[in-house]
Length: 231
Image (cartoon, rainbow, N blue to C red; front, side, top):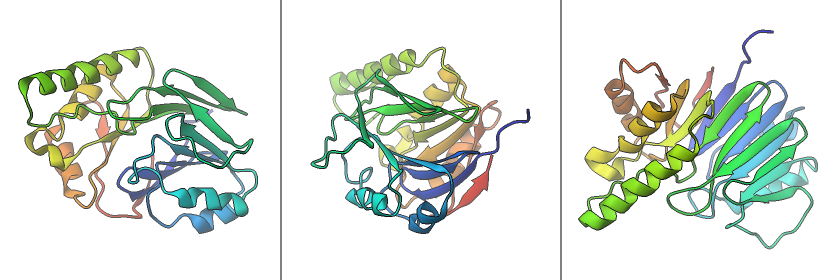
């Protein structure tokens, strides 16, 4: 059996569409063109939402079930919506869920909500949500707490194989923009690292890729909304 092929479309900010052999996965949709592929795809569709911040959760995702009654949703339990249905699933940190042949385990965040580790079609995909070393220039106590909380959560992931990681590289952190990503790569060694959470500053992904030259992890550079690539 050959290596699985994954097609990825960068939507915006932390939003991605991931197409495997049998599944169409959508993570943290904020904006971007996906409606047509949702209507037409013959694959199983699972939509993930790590938390309720508006740059990670757009209520429009619930409209998609009008076109696809078989769609499944996986939300953080923090983001309980008013609509109740059998296809809407909730996870707290460290809870697990099986949807047919897809398995997902939630991990914690250093903000609100969860991060997701998804096992599907021979691949293990991690989406960090707002899990990051939020290394703001702050009081020494706050900075120490941010470091401690982040590194503790990364340790919960130790021993997990990660083929593809979507992880924040946020220019608002200024010189600390890549601290969380560097630590994540060093400790967990994902095969492929895809930056996210950079808003309208995609150039930060090229900067991070250059900074991480020599790492065994492949860093993907993103340049524009709608960019597609095959892994």
